[in-house]
Length: 114
Image 1 (cartoon, rainbow, N blue to C red):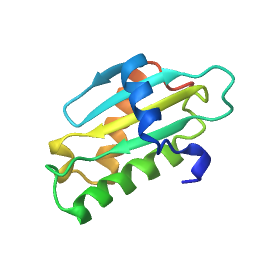
Image 2 (cartoon, one colour):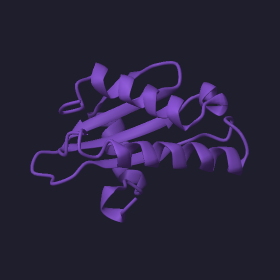
Image 3 (cartoon, rainbow, N blue to C red):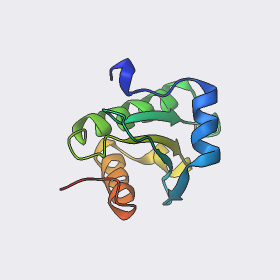
C-alpha cells in the first residue's frame, strides 16, 4: 500500500478516535472521520499484542491492506479510516476478513457502490 494511503502518526490516530465515528462487528472495529477535499482515503491499522505473536499480527494487517486495495474503487475517498482487529480474526483467512470488512463498510455506508 502506498504511503499516501496510510495513517501512521499517533496524533492522526488520536484525532480520528476523538472526532470520528465508530462501529463494529465481532471481528473488527472501524473508526472513520470525514476529511473534505481529500483526494483519496487513508487507513490506519491496529492489531494488539493480545491477538498473537508478530507473525500473526502482521498476517492480519496484510489481509486488511489487501482487502482495502481490492476495494479501493468502492471506498469513499474523503475518509480517514482506522481498523482495529479483534481476537476472532486469528482464525480467519483472507476471504473471511474481506467479507467482514465489506459488511462493516456497507453497514455504515462508507462504500460508494457495489
